[in-house]
Figure 1 (tube, rainbow, N blue to C red):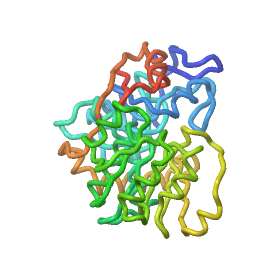
Figure 2 (figure 1 turned 60 degrees about the vertical axis):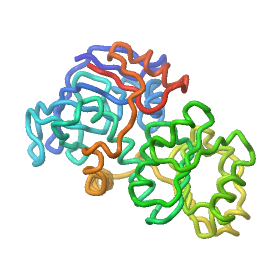
Figure 3 (figure 1 turned 135 degrees about the vertical axis):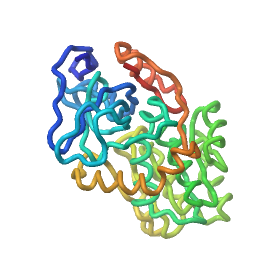
Length: 320
């Protein structure tokens, strides 16, 4: 089969053997795969999701070809959305707990855009972030697919104030279409003052941060006493200064999350909770992600270059 694999020289299109499902897995004929930031390091065979020679891609949609003996909820011919590894290919396998049967009114492109953003942000906002109706939420880096999902989940779960950040003027202007009541540009060093003003000087209850780096200390200042910060991504840097005094004085819970160190049982539970909580809203179209651009599988290198240029709003997809 045709697949895009990670190499020290970057993404390469190769012919490789078709995977075979284990007892706990589902084999899917891939129709569409979604791109994610982690794919960029995987394309070089590095990062938590990458290895030299491994097929890249964390999410995809398609039709079930074969289901392992332990799989009970889908069968051959079912249309599904999946997450795992190996989505940039004509066929891919996924653990049964990461396979969602999709409704007839949902197309493959829409389905492929959902799994990573849905699981990541439901876990960050609802489970790790412990958001309650009536609270205020700030999503740092809100114009990505994951960020846009976070805005909508916060709004869907009853947040009274949802704030989204973006350093791109055009993309920032679109955030209100996806649940943001207020937007900020973190290039403006006074942005924490704007957040404090909007929250009567208290700060937000919850920040979901996909940027980190230099934004950590301003984020601490913009978080209320006994508030929470959930660190999801580190696009602004994996290390940086941390004001321990502000952190202690405001008694902030600073929570790190990742899928890289989770057991398959934990991942299954995350998927189960997200589907139970939000799948009706997703299938009704109340929560959705914009599709920025679609490429063919043999344009995977071009698709990743487009993502790396950071000019997109929403999801980039590969179609087979």
